[in-house]
Length: 219
Image 1: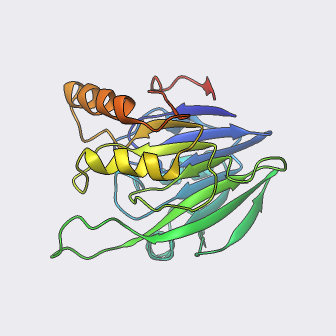
Image 2: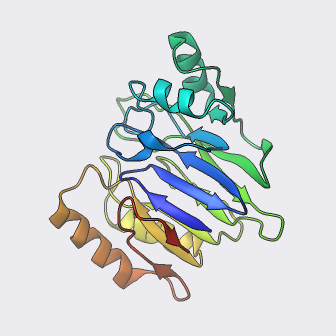
């Protein structure tokens, strides 16, 4: 697979001839010029994961792309009317997109504070014809899929995270490879501290790799 990280939680996955874009949000850049997408997949409604100002142009440039989101976000985008029609990715759903199968799991955003409402959050798992669990994007959650995951997009910094949590999550999932996402909220110095600690405490057998933003990387 080839992965391009556009910053924060925005990830382009090129896998077996299928192109999937996850979470084109306000803290990401570079996804605006993409064409040839097979699907745009949004985990939840927060602006850093779904930039409603730039979504219409992205959809216009990719009219054939399937569009999936959690139930709340799909309804909100439909109400806006300028970002096309969006389908709901529900829990346990399996959708064939190009040569791959995309599954919805998880269901809820991590708790930011007990006084704040918890919104929908769909974690996406991508299967190929030869690899079940080839890739996982959990969005803003630490949902453990209880299955083998090959490559994990790891939330590594957030208002709802302390450093022990991504470490424990990485150990629980134990993928072949993980790369950090959701670090648009951190300074460069903060990212280096977090990434160094995660790398030091990763489980045996897992490769932790920081991807250069905007650079396609074979994993």
